[in-house]
Length: 110
Length: 124
Image (cartoon, rainbow over all chains, first blue to last red; front, side, top):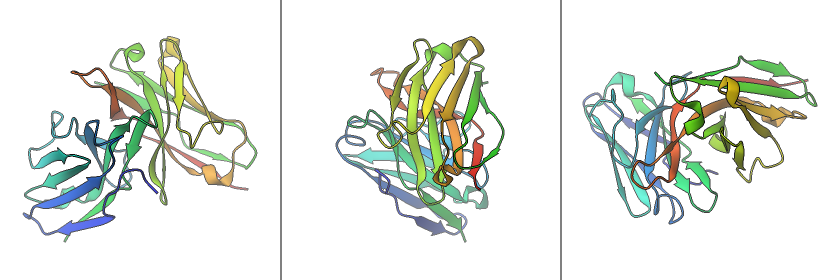
């Protein structure tokens, strides 16, 4: 059971916009920034979004993040086949004094 | 370019000990905390602990306290994750990752760069 809650799966067709939600509590998302990672099959997680809505260099602007209260969302617009991956949210937890993760969302591009 | 390069896959028997490594390069190794993350098919990503290379200050997740030991050798920019007695349930992929610090608040934040992972298999 992960500290942050994500839907286990999401799907969309090429060109569509999909969103993935992440729910937490006041000790993590409510008081700290949200990070998002993309994990392609057989590879390590890769930072996609930091500080709620910032993209590292090289990440396409099709990926965007938002946060409100104790929840956050990742949006992917103009969906492409190469976006098929697992997506994880994360935030620092003040009670645990360390990072906590969501259970991951498997995105399928139909 | 920031790189974290981990040691290779391991196959061990229950009860055996193991130490895996993670070597950082392309940045000031002593300026960032380094963490370890376990990934299993059933439980996703789990934070195990983090260590600060300059003084080896270590924080463990309650779930892993007493189960593993995290250490660092700053002279060779390498962090380690160690088990004294492996169990089958330790079978997983283990990642090292660099902890970030928020540029405004200075508070520690989740990871930015990750190693390629070390697969540990424990089986009799």
